Image (cartoon, rainbow over all chains, first blue to last red; front, side, top):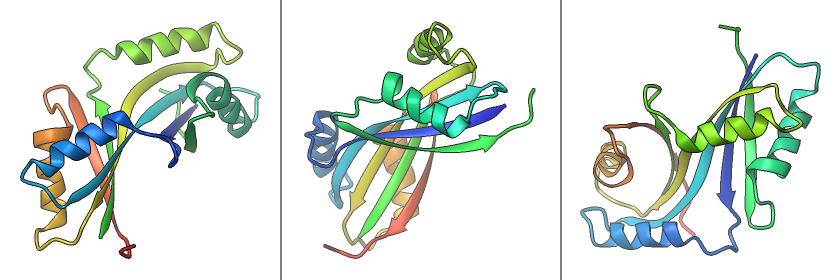
Length: 84
Length: 84
């Protein structure tokens, strides 16, 4: 069994409306020292035992289901976990 | 200057509709070994130099602006970065 943590971020060149709104909000808050906010996704996958190469499988999942690689980058960490 | 990475997740007891939809999608995909998907947020903050205690300030930002602590948990990492 594996726990996989996937971090999905907008590419630097892509406009991030949620982040821009949050940045503005910070400027008018008690925390004007916050200069930039970028908002991405954090996805946790629980994967059962499999004969597949997990790293390759997660790359495929990201490319095919989880990430829009036109505008988003991703990285992930795999932890082997004891089955419940 | 600081780079802060904030991970926001729904509490275990809270229903995650986006995660549930993704879990179902995986079951019908080439990756039925994916047993659970939970979807959270990943937020990157760039914070300018400040006399505040950065760790305390980020806790305050999370509680007051970024996280709904009724239903979400958060954790973060602070990196000191050279100013541009």
